[in-house]
Image 1 (cartoon, helix red, strand yellow):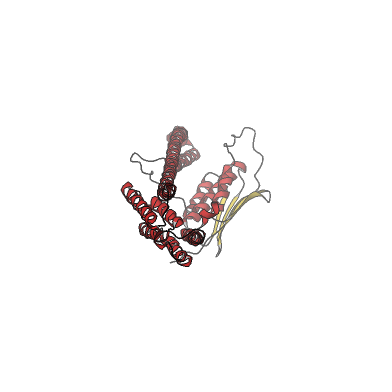
Image 2: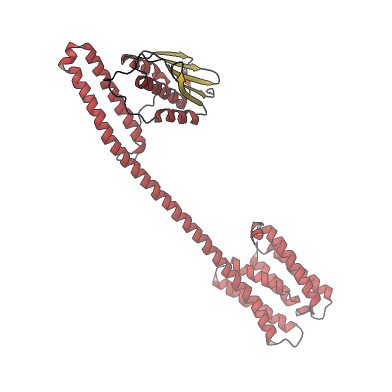
Length: 387
C-alpha cells in the first residue's frame, strides 16, 4: 500500500486499466456471454470487454462520462469489473447526494436491462449480485472520499493549532524579553545614572576648582556614563517597542570612523594607547566596521582591566582579501597594589561574543598571551564593494 501511494495518479490509472482489461477479457472466456451479446462468439465479447475496460484510463478526467459509457457496455456485454470501478470513481468524485442518487438509479437500470437482454433463467441471487455490484462501490467510494476530506481537514486544523501555539509562545517570549529589558533598564540605568550625577557634582564641586585633574577625571567619568546609558538604551531598544507597538528608534551604529575616538578616550583615561590604520576601513561593509569597532573596544577595555599601565597598540590593516585587526598590550608596569580598587566584574563573555561576531562574518578570531602581554587578533574577509 505504501508503494502504491508513492506512484503518481497516471501510473495508478495505467496499472488499474491493464488489470480491468485483463479481468474483463478473462471473464468473457470463463463465463458464457450475457447482455445484448448473448450467443455471440467469445472473441467478440472479449473485445468488447477489453474496450470497456480501457475506458478506465479516463476515469479521473471525466468520471461521469466514463461511468455512463461503462453502463452501456455492461448492458451490451456484461462487464462487472469495469462497472464496479466506474461506480467507485463516481462516489469518490461527486459530493452532491442528488448526483449520486442519479448515478445509482442509472446503474440499477443498466443492471435490469442487462438481465432482460441476457439468457433466460436469471434468478434473484443474480439480481442481488448486480445490485451490490452497482451500489456497493458507489457507497464505498463516497465513504473513502469523505474520510480523506476529514483527514485533510484534521491535518489543517492541527497545523493551525500548531501555528497558533507558536504565535502564543513567541508572544510570551516577546513579553518576557520586554519584562527583562525593563528590569535591566531600571537596575543598570539607575546605578549608572547615579555615577553620572556623582561625576557631574564632582566636576562643579570645590575639589575640582582646586585640582584641575579631578575636574578632567570627573568629566571623563560623566561622558563614559552618558555613553554607557546610550548604548544600554540602544541594546534594550532591540527587545522592546514604543507605545505605538513599533520597534524603538535605534541610534547610529558604531563604525570604523570612531576608532580614533576610542583610542583618544583611552589616552585621556591615562592609558598609553596608539593607533595605526593602513587603508580605509570606513569604506568596508557596515557589519565589518561594527566588528572592528567592537574588537578594538574590547581590547582596550581588557588591557585597562588586566594590565593597567601597560602600553596598548591597535593595528587595523586593510588588504585586498580582507581586514586584519590586532590589539596588543605589553607587560604591565607592576603588580597590583593591595589597596588598589578591585577589578570590575567580568564573566568572560566579551571574547566569546567577539569570536561569535567574527565567525558570523566567516572570519577567524584569536586571543591569548603574546610576548609577555596579551593580544586579540581577527581577520575578516570581505568582498570589494560593487557599483
